[in-house]
Image (cartoon, one colour):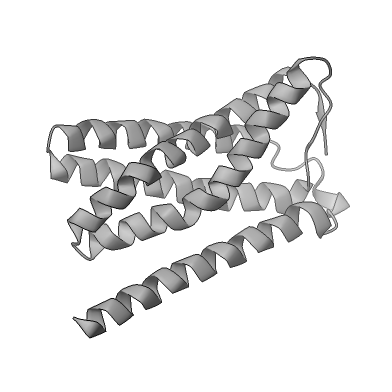
Length: 181
């Protein structure tokens, strides 16, 4: 039992360390790394792809929730793995977009501006929390500790779903109102 506890602690510590490193890398990438000029007009479809991947992740999370409520573990597992794949592809596409284009500035004015920034800030803060939560939840599932998995998933589910849905909303705000890179 002691070895199992140490392995769990090491795994969770590694997940948290990786999550912190990924978050710090993204801050550097978006706000501090110079944007290469030669790519300014390339791969402009990435924000739309990111929104699609977030939407697919949200849809998969909802189906996964639906099937776990029906006690259909196999279908739940498939949808949650699919949500993880969509979220992972989103992360790759997001990193590529910000590598090529840097920060996107929202130029909308009036009442929409504070609404946009509330959605954006809550999305960013909760995405930093969601990353380790999702990975820890998957860790407990893959290590067949389903009671612990279920306890943590109660928190992971709404946060992950919120992050996925607000990712789509941020894109729609940026589509409807002016932005610049």
